[in-house]
Length: 216
Image 1 (tube, helix red, strand yellow):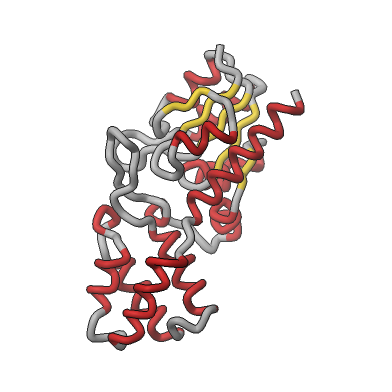
Image 2 (image 1 turned 90 degrees about the vertical axis):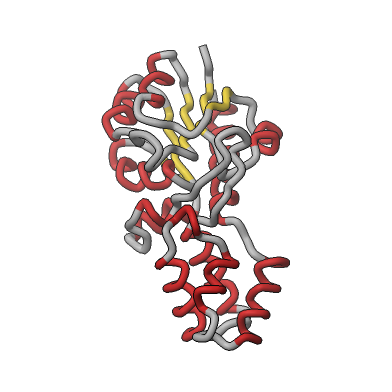
């Protein structure tokens, strides 16, 4: 019987996750996976990654079932942040900035955290809009881009279908509407200073799951 089950995919490399938390790691959750983990007796269920468009996504009822069975259910980073923002009033615990942004209403769409990934290695093959949004704001704060450039770049990213979103494609779409030197500064920022908000939130969730496990 697994004590702790973590649904993890492209948000964080598994080997890094295992350095933080000893758990049974499973692929991104689809419909029924949370239910099965609860039925198997998992005491802590950490939902980080889940499928959006490839299969049926995690149902609200299965999270409620897990909570009713007495499991601690955490959500962060991706599908977990989305479900936690909807179900925290019933006892699901949200962790991280993405969860808080959904809860505040700053983020509303599944599209913000959606990406495509290699089905064998779980390595991300596109960039989630939430990371792009976050790094554009960081670049603005550092004076690398101005507000008009930020707006054009974000609109360019938003206009791309989520499997095609990358920083390079975003900048290509903004070419001619943002000064070339501004794009070059932003490219250097992305190469050297960009942050991965989904990964940061996933790490926080694993630390929180570890704290709960140690309480028991």
